[in-house]
Amino acid sequence: MNHVYFVPPRFKGPQGQEDMPYLLTAGPVTTSRAAKIAMLADHGPDDGEFRGLIADIRRDLKRLSGAGPAHEILLVPGPGLLAVEAVLTSLAPAKRKKTLVISNGRDADAAAAILVKMERPVVKLDKAENATPTVEEVAALLDADHDISHVWMSHCDSTSGLVNPVGDIGKLVKERHKTFLVDASLSFGAMPLDVIGDQLDVMVAVPETCLESVPGFSIVAVRRDLLVAASGKCPSQVMDLHALWEAQEGAGHFRMTPPTQAFAAFRQALRELETEGGIGMRRARYQRNAEELITRMRAMGFTPLLAEGDAGPLVQCFLAPRDKKFDFALFQEGLRQRGYLIAPGLLGKRASFRVGGMGQVDHKVIKGFAGAVEAVLKDLDVQEFTPQNA
Image (tube, rainbow, N blue to C red):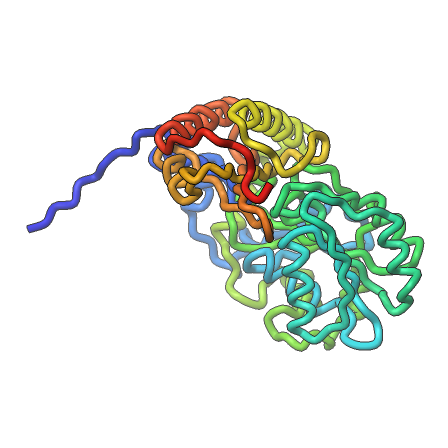
C-alpha cells in the first residue's frame, strides 16, 4: 500500500495560506485572509442580498474610477480579455470607420488581434516595449486618416510595466472628436486614472491586480450613450454589453451565472482599499516595493528593461543574464520553493522575466524575495549578468 505524506514547505507564505508562495506576478496577486474568508459563504444570484451587494460594488466603482452621471459600470463575468472582446465586439466600428490600436506590449496586441479576428477595420501604432507613444505620433495618424473614429490603448502594459500617457492622449483624442477606450486591467486601483478627467469613453479593469481581489469577472466603465447606440448591433449573445447593461440596470440580474464568491471577495477588497487610505496610499506602498526591488536586483547585477524613471510601480521586467547556467525554469522553481512565484517574460526578442509588487505584499516581503534570489543564484552558480541578446 502506497502512503502519501505531507511535506511541509521550507517557507512561510502569506497569512491564511502559509503553505503557498507569495504571488509576485502581473496578476492574480496575493489576497488578504479576510477576502479569502468572504468566499466561504454561498450566495444565490437571485437573492436580494446578493443584488444589493452588486449595487454597492457598482456604486463604489463609479466613485473610484471618477466616472460621472453619463457613465455606467458593468460587471462582466469572465477574464479581462473577455471584457476586452465584449467592448470591441459591441462598440468598435464594423465598417467604414476604423479603430486605432496604440501598442507597446502584449495587452494591446491582443486587442488588435481581436479586431482582426472579427474582421473589424484596424490601424496599429507599434512601439517598442520600452517606449511610450507621443502625442505627436498619435496626432499624425489621426490627421492622416480621418476614418479613424476609435482609439484603444493600455494604461500600463503587463509586458514591461511601462505606464502610458493616458491623460495626454485622451486630451488629443477628444480634441479630434474620437472615442477613447483604455485597458486599465493592470493599473486600476493604484495608478492615477480618472474617467472624466482623463476623458475616457470606456475603461476596462479587473479585480485581481491593484484592487487585490480574486479573478472571476471584469469591470467596464462606459458612456451610457455608447451603450444605447450599441443596442442590437453586437453579433455575440454572450458579449453584448447593451444586453448586459439592461439586465444589471433593470432587475440587477446577470445574463449568465455570476461568480458569486468572487463578488463577495471583491466587496471585502474594496473595504480594505478604503481602510488603507485609497488609491494614493496603495500606490505609495507599491512604489516602495518597486524601489526596494529595483535597488536590490541592480545590486545583484540584473538589468531592468526600463530606464530609471520610466518604470511604473506595478511590474518590473528584468533582462535574463547571458550566463549559460541561468535557466529561467530552474530559477522560477527555486524561488517558488522558497516562497515566491514570479512570471516569465513576454518580450518578443529578448529573454526576460517579470516581478510584480502588487497585492498583499510590502517592502519586507520584497526584501525576503531578494534574499531568495541570491540563494537560487548561488545554487545555479550564475556569475555573468550581462543581459542575453545585448
